[in-house]
Length: 60
Image (cartoon, rainbow, N blue to C red):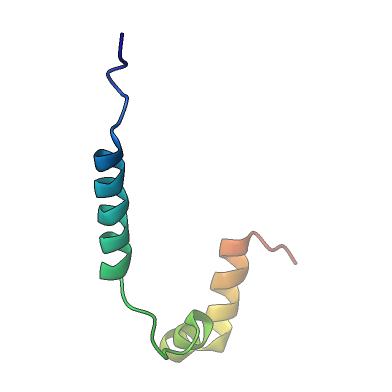
């Protein structure tokens, strides 16, 4: 008896290709500055430091 969730190689290839296309749609690698630099430009260094500390769970 075959499992209902068993996948065929063609299905796996289609899923892999779909995932790859989704990743590429998020943006191609380019020469953008790092995210921290972009945040500092948008928010300023003080708010960026506070935001990153909060998101990382860093406690002072």
